[in-house]
Amino acid sequence: MTRSEVTIDLGALRRNVERLRRVLGEVELWAVVKADGYGHGAADVARAAVDAGARALCVATVAEGLSLRRGLPGQRIIALGPSEQVREAREAGLELVVAGGAIPEDVPVHVKLDTGMGRYGFERLPPLTANVVGLMTHLATADTDPDFAERQLERFREATAGSDPALTLHAANSAAALRLPSSRLDAIRCGIAIYGLSPFGTDPAADGLEPVLRWRSELAQVKQLEAGESTGYGRSFVADRPTWIGIVPVGYADGFRRDLTGSEVLVDGERRPVVGTISMDSLAVALAGPVERGTPVTLIGDGLLAEEHARRAGTISYELVAGIRTSPERAERLVVSG
Image 1: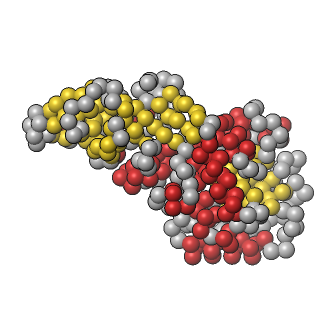
Image 2 (image 1 turned 60 degrees about the vertical axis):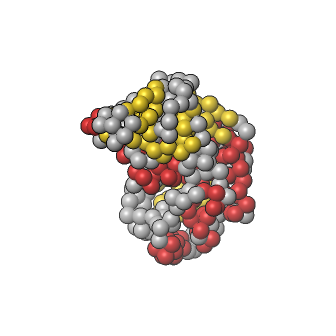
Image 3 (image 1 turned 30 degrees about the vertical axis):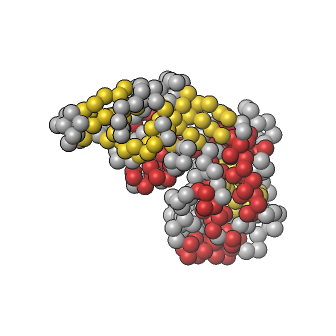
């Protein structure tokens, strides 16, 4: 193993897409694969999502769309973020989201309304040109405050009332798709849930979802600290009795954040606490006793949820998985088609 190994179970991703499609019924599912597919590998997950019935792919930038286009000719791809690369989008057959200013010509456009997110979006619907294919908004609180999300949806309905029925209306993200039936308009833009991660920070199994990513390493060193000895920078962990520790060759440069001290990993299937200061390239684990160097360690997966780490770090699973480094210099990625 090269320091660590990230496994992407594309079979689980397909099953998540199929599960969401059953929830949505006739509403189209558009898979959000921005930020390298939330750290899962955009090219692989995009193909798997389309195979499972996703009708379109959503990215953040035109550059992300161009990268996908090379392997997916003819597939519908929508760039959600603001962009000046209209010519490139037009030539590649991408669709653009416009949230202000003039609507560009000769490229399919989705007009975005700001109904409460307080970021990109028109305050009111502008005059529409013939190349506008969709109207959209972005829900701010579908995972935390459904009442406010419902108010946003009502504003969107009012703003788009009387528009051409041929236009695609879309507002829902993963949380709304799962909890707010009223948000399921003509299409939903589903990101985190297709990766088997909970938009609510809870166990994804509660919504019938399977985690897609597994991250493993192994113990590179095992040693015993005597009482009063420490491990790592700043001596933040000092043994109060003879203590066996294992060193895992993964650190914050790999995406295992510095604020994950105190979280747990699996050492040969057993939960063990991360102790001491996490450094750039390694972390320490308190062991129940001596074990062999090379003993497998699971950082995410095998029942250990990314959501658990996120709660420890005071963040969301989206940030954790998007930050995992899978470049050949740091890790291996093994894609399982499943």
